[in-house]
Amino acid sequence: MSDIYKPFVTKYGTSVVDFRHPRPHLEVDARKVGGWPVLANTRIGYDVIATAAAGDALSARDVSKFYPGSTVEAIRDAIDFDAEVRGRVRRTA
Image (cartoon, rainbow, N blue to C red):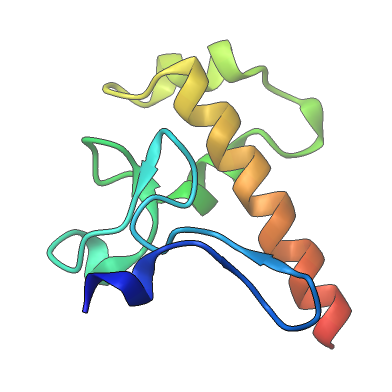
């Protein structure tokens, strides 16, 4: 059953991320925030971080000061994952 969560490539050549770890510093756990992707070892949603860093108003280091337990690397992963999600939503809309 765990194989269904692993990354794969669709018949169209699109890469799909590992559903449990969409980025090295992000994780998905059904017991945390209803299975929403969060920064590893926290309950901070990736989208919260991406929104805080939107428009380059704050650097990853600045954002990490507001969210204890976050790291600059995790924040960068959240921003990157958010960009991928938004890009896929635009393509399918």
